[in-house]
Length: 259
Length: 280
Ligand SMILES: Nc1ncnc2c1ncn2[C@@H]1O[C@H](COP(=O)(O)OP(=O)(O)O)[C@@H](O)[C@H]1O
Ligand SMILES: [Mg+2]
Image 1: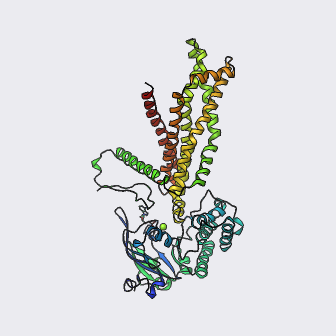
Image 2: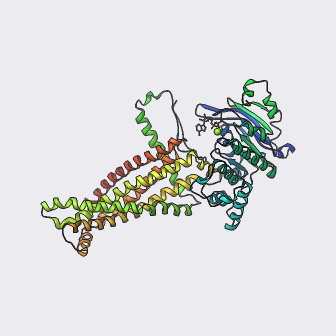
Image 3: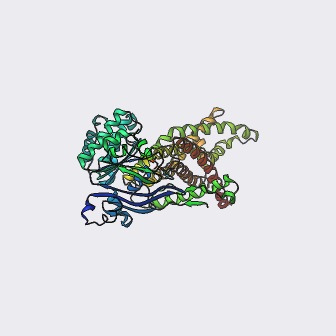
């Protein structure tokens, strides 16, 4: 299905292109002799949660880092919001990537800054015209959205793992991204906190109509959040389908993720 | 095939990625090979520093904050060290001068050694231990916990924001710290002189200023900028290029100190050669 429609959706005026937000065609990525992504084809449509499964080290993080531009793809095509990123100028690229949010596996909070400064950092970097008060207001709102209002003057080191994840999410959402990339959002958290994070992800999807890629090992998180799931193996998408499709897959290897 | 991937200017690659090849018999000694690769990647890092440092926008606020953290916070340590060095040096030098009946030269001799050599070098070594390791550990832990990546996706150039500011702060603050350490060192020396004799403060300091010329002060002052630059640059280099693992933090801090201290001595040696060339 992906391959059939692969070339039509690149047209900016095509009706479908307005619904496809990210498209990868035959994407390859290697580090030296280590071929991490061999031939990745995928599409994410507006408002969709796509869960990516795969063993550790298979290149799931590399995949989303290519989308946000922390890594560059070596071959193939990458379209974000209908634009081929290899054809964009540097400032256009920046504009497009401003619409992408990234939740890092380790939350990536700035240790040397308070919670408030962590939230204001991306704001002050992107919207330089904002006044101090406006920034403070946005920071407060962002914290309320993730249920952390009373931590605004604490340091990140004083927060628990779940709170750090939520703060990381708040810091990303403060810029109202259209596309969210989650790198193992529930790894290292207890089941209850994991479920809270999963429902936050769903809430974000509903509230802002964001499209998301969620990398996870947590089947519960996948079950709760996924509209569609792909499984990566040896640098290609080995399986694709809904949660129940893959759970009942004929392939024992695919099924093994759901046990 | 040996393959070295050089950093692309606009992607934030961290220095040189080295891929171990199969025909490493070209250079038999792997320590040598690693040394040259390290030197070449440090050179690229240095070039990148100059490229980014002069390109706007400038991170002034962060530079001021780092100068405060790097400079002000090092004052006590540097002061104590300076005082002890001045005192001990004076006490140790006295017997030798007594033997030659030249004890009245004590203030002048100690002052010249403190200003020209001991003040700058000891302060730079202390600075390497405190600030070099601090920068190395901080940047390495930011690297491990993806804070550097997070900065980049917030459209902040992490090299400019983290590295350029720290290197500049170290370069500008070390000369100030050395001047401070020199002053306290001379005060320590004054106390040292008066422990076993009596010299008035007026006599002590007028002797010192008579013995110190432009040739003593100027080269000593200039080389401290290079010491500070080396410490800041090597600390940043080790931290920014650290391994993505927790053990990378300790390693970065440790090798930053070792490498920076060594560099201080190397720069000092070169500086002495250059100064004596001009003085003859
Ligand atoms: N910057 C890099 N340089 C070299 N190799 C890398 C780099 N980033 C990732 N890799 C390699 O890519 C592979 C996939 O990594 P990653 O995407 O982190 O896996 P995961 O699926 O667990 O997220 C690993 O073998 C890793 O060693
Ligand atoms: Mg990963």
